[in-house]
Length: 237
Image (cartoon, rainbow, N blue to C red; front, side, top):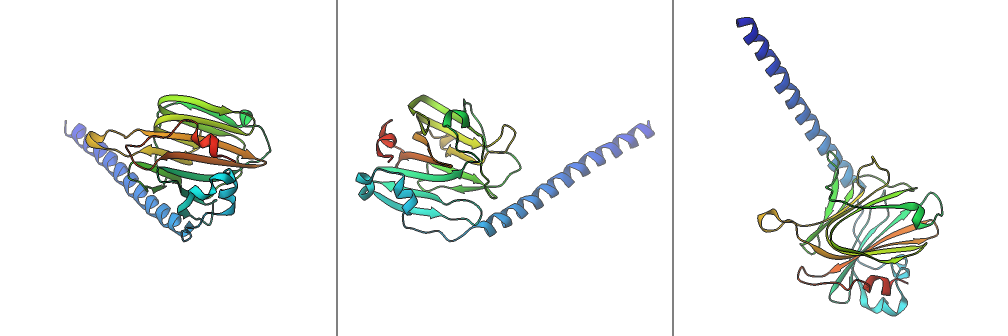
């Protein structure tokens, strides 16, 4: 009996020691990732870039103004813009390995997801009812784009070789570049009362110009607002 008790104690100590070691390593790696992420940052800017302006029809340029342009050493800027007084826009560029049609590039799935565990994300919250998160680290040209959408009333508002657009009442959506890859972009409503995730009326467009692919998002400026399903399609140049 004593031998069995000692054996059980040894096994328990090994299990607890392994769990403690795993936790310590995870914490150390998280701090390393955070340090690396901060080293990748460049100062923000507050002026709309010519590239961002070119994404929209010139008749709407007077309604655009910059909130913040998030700059990085290792990926393209992420632009947070205002459209008039009622809407917010987010734009982000990705490069493609080849100039292919969107139908060959995008795999879309209606699925609830979370950010990828054991990876560090930069989290941007501007209006306090949704979070835009992007993976720490650099970006590379992509050959495939896996997108998940989760929410209510999902409709495709535009679909051709160079533009695909969706409208939904969004709980979350994500983008990754291989089936087993970590999510690079993760958008989610903030958690409110009783940890219920807020739903966000959202227009999502993927616009291809040559070997450049642009992600464009449009959401209301306030949590009580709405966004017309076809508004983003109308203003894209």
